[in-house]
Image (cartoon, rainbow over the protein chains, first blue to last red):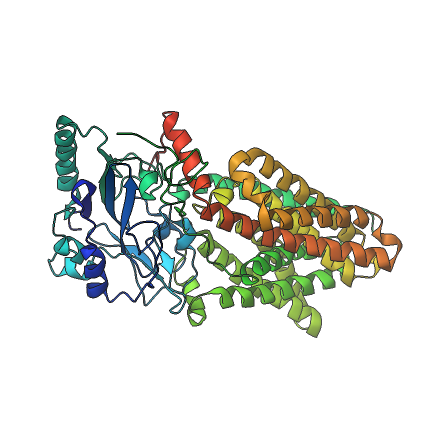
Amino acid sequence: MAERMGFFTDTTVCIGCKACEVACKEWNDVPDDGFVFRATSYDNTGALGASTWRHVAFVEQDGRWLMSSDVCKHCTHAACLDVCPTGALFRTEFDTVVVQADVCNGCGYCVPACPYGVIDRREDDGRAWKCTLCYDRLRGGMEPACAKACPTKSIQFGPLDELRQRAEERVERLHAEGTTEARLYGADPDNGVGGTGAFFLLLDEPETYGLPPDPVVTTRDLPAMWRWAGGAALALAAGVAVCFAGRKP
Amino acid sequence: MPRRRDEMVPDAEFRSYYGQPVLKPPIWHEPHMPAYLYLGGLSGAAGAMAAAARLTGRDRLELAARMAAFAGASAGTVFLVAELGRPMRFLNMLRVFKLTSPMSVGSWTLAAHSGLTGVAAGSAVTGLLPLAGDAATLASGLTGVAMATYTAVLLADTAVPAWHEGMRELPFLFSGSALASAGAALMLTTPRALAGPARAAAAAGAMAEVVAGGLMERRLGLVGEPYREGRAGRLMRASRALTLGGGLLATVAGRSRTLTALSGLAITAGALCTRFGVLEAGRASAKDPRYTVVPQRDRLDAGQPASVPGR
């Protein structure tokens, strides 16, 4: 297996140009996701989805704008991959999570399983789609299209260990410069998804950017779920037995 | 820098991105998904009842149960395949077996249960291979209890707050509802004098369904709100009234055809309302960022962030 690769998105230097969104669509041939005037901010993309694999959020606050390019997190413990019944979702040699379009049968289970609301089904196509971390480019020794196109190095691509170290240093520097609200999101390997392959440096609470503050991979609790279901199955069997235990007419 | 807690969503004590959902709501369609949940449950419990009838020598009830189990599994499979984005690829469900995917476990369970109930019903109708039919009936009792409960894990094993947090009660809600549904179906298709166990099952299942649903809504607190509000709330209330009424009627339904019909239809309608209501509550709880953000923020504020021990 190759080294684990990922994204470090430093939102402090994002200028909201959306070059990442465009580059992603161009390279990956992602179809139109609609022209919507949302009337909330400069964000006319809305959210990540089947045909939106990079999404620049515009958080307009008093005295400052926060901009952040969101993307699939490529979780260490990926719920979408865990629950996929066909094996269409798989983990690559770069430790990223990718859908095989020729296997996906569009069951839609990955969609509500994702704790970040990333993956979605294209209704006209019937299959689930999301960021591949440009699997094809990685195999060709290139960096993903969004990172390549980012003019401010807000989106950084590389081996995850290196990125985490670089991000720690960046946060320390920001703190020293007085930007005490700087914090990393998703970099901790002990969090509810075992750390993410794509992590972020944020300037406010994650929910402000539309990110879950403390996500959990749903399959963490699956053993308990099967136990409760086993109890219910036994109760059902016992119930049926009792109903049939009486005297025959 | 001034912090306004309410900058995105007025009158809310949590923060979000313009009130947009954090999660993607389940995309499963109506009536496909709730119909499958109902039919799968009906078929599963009917399989268990067919096996019980076989073991206790109740031939007429066994025949009705074999037919109901087969009909439920067949119709359910049609809904399930129609639900897929790529129905022609339904066989990809059997490409792998994954314990981490309740849908994979469920697909294999459904495949086994459909096959067994098909053999059981086919043998009953044609009179061919009676031993194989009997063996399939007994085996469908085992696949049946799995059919009636795995769907609860299917829903709970998502990020949808109202489903995930309901992991304890949902299996009892669904297995109770399945028992009531099968009891109702057998009550309606078996001569009254021979349908005593079906009426007992209908009554007991209905009580289990009502109790499990009530316990779940009470325990979940904020995250249980979607089961009480809006369309989901109306469906869940209708379900409770119909199931409770039908279940109570089942205890006296042996007296007349009218009572039998009323009870059976009320329980069936109640079980359908439960499935539509649970799907709708899941959608509502995923669409409102409150149910995603508030419990997670509370966890962080309490200094107890989530972790994945042992993985």
